[in-house]
Length: 168
Length: 150
Image (cartoon, rainbow over the protein chains, first blue to last red):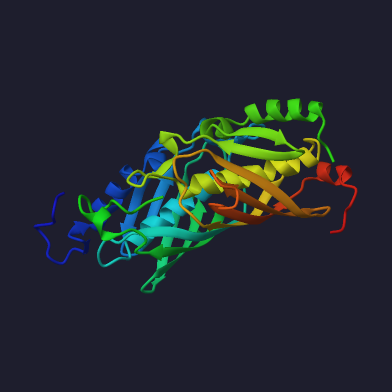
């Protein structure tokens, strides 16, 4: 993968720029690709991702509103990404629990964004908050609170790619 | 308790009309008077391709859908419950096996239902994930509910 030769100050994780790492993680998650998730913006411990509206994701055929489970998936994935971006070096992780509060239905025909912030990371556990929205996080579709266990996968699985253990 | 064959036919029709349920490939069965949903393992549902494991969000979606269909079934499909909040506990990674889920309505009030859902794969005594959540019941549900308490 491309190292950042130009700027020694640029933030990296295991030698990978944050934006490159986020792209690589998302493209290696088959389900994220299947529903069309993409990275919008990343910074240290924070990620914003996008889910385009798609009729195959409709949960209520009468209204055309996407299924709540899709919002859950977007927040889960965004939270995992924020956790990866909070690490000093790539480590394995697994979702321990995820709470979602649904404030309003997503609007049909509109993209949904998810912003997630890993606001605290202890030796073994990461704590993450997330917000799903259309226009601004101040007008949320749903909010989330998640905990991730760290180092859930042995280092032998981390040999070929720094991304082997992330996602899902 | 609603459990006639007519209900099952209605349920299958309604079920097939939900695009996201089709996308996931979820199936629904009535076994011994209980609704059981099944998710077949598929490539496009993978969250970690190196294990491989199902996406945690997909497991959450299956649990949530199972809760909703249980409530719809109980209301004879007169209501479409909306999730207020759900909490998902991930106990084991979802392997590339069939995943089953079954919901228990802990409390069915006039406006809100409290539901617990368990998901398992090859061993029902080794659940892979649990959900508990609150679901808002639309007006139609009220008329169908005899044991209103909330």
